[in-house]
Length: 404
Image 1 (tube, rainbow, N blue to C red):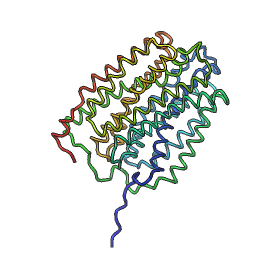
Image 2 (cartoon, rainbow, N blue to C red; image 1 turned 135 degrees about the vertical axis):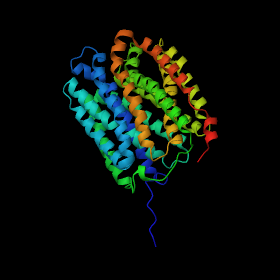
Image 3 (cartoon, rainbow, N blue to C red; image 1 turned 45 degrees about the vertical axis):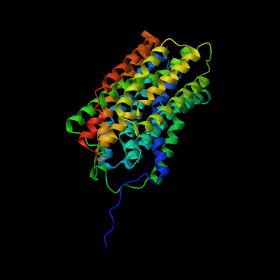
């Protein structure tokens, strides 16, 4: 009697594992934005006159976050996703602890760059691992997106309180220790993979012709670049935007952190809603109208102050976050699981590394142009994204080729 072939890691009957993969997404985004939430305090300690002058030192983290996705995706398919996630948790924790010990701006820049390198692992590895057996991938991606954006909310909320009580170094060190603890839990919960994804049998959910697949990949990558520019400009700048526009109304950093956390928490719900819609409706028109919705909201926020800014910023972020699940959904739909980490890595390497320019440019742009002009520029970027999405192959292209 022969033994059955062992199956790869399955999440269908492992809720704790799925929870940990969603927590990992929260960790990924949270750690990258601790710097943005604490930049004013760090700038003051390091002797910078304005936070805008320190902001460019964080660009290395976001550049490595993007370019590192390419080797991370390849290793995820060839080595296995479990081992890469263990490297992710332990590496993020160690890099955060190193960042907490920085004594000057260049040490901080180096530590943040290391943090970005480990952060690059999650998206091309963790998301394919999460959806590899999902019956409703859109809903799964939506919940995962919610977890990631709650990480952004926690970064704003927790960092404000830790700075107030323990200082900015604790804002990196305490989450760093928690990340290492999550890694140990993941090692205990996640079974060893019996074969790497690249060696498995499989096929794409929807088969496209080579020309249509190349077109879809080009569109998703180009749209991801413009969407990532918006994401980086908003998530790295919103803390200082709220501080500026609430001056004279609220000035306590912890309270402002709560407001920003509420913005992200409420906006994050959009990803769950969009994820469910992706499973029911055609991708192209849904994606297009969500991007279109960003434009008037960003224009209106450009001149808003106080509580009106809070309302408009929350609505804007709901549409910006709501656009995020589409690229992952397209990869799940059109790409064989054996290749998903590598394809996701290529897409992320291009889009995230180019969009890291936004982090480098944010401080100087605010200093010279002001937030009002930047918000109008972001509305223009959203318009560019909408024009790119129009080029996405329609649903009729999918059905003509056939389903597997």
